Image: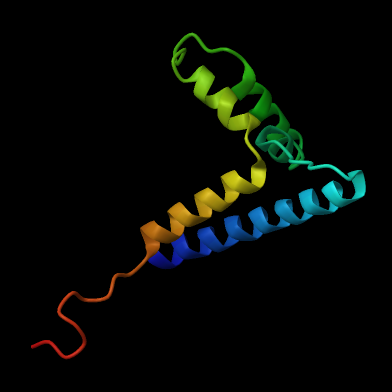
Length: 105
């Protein structure tokens, strides 16, 4: 299980670095900061991801209290979201060293 979490963390980290690199290139060419929102990065993944993002952006009667949070999250920079998810997955899959040390009885 730890291997899968670390591998997923690695894939998300690569995605975050890729999005950050694209943002950096666009920022240099535009001579101003350009940050790709999470909704645009997810929608660029394909038609099924686009319909998923559009479904998230529609107001829902069931989770009305979650709608502002979802909209706020979709407006955040994609690289920051991916790096945060990579960190969380890595922390879950991290193997702690034994508390007593290497030579404990």
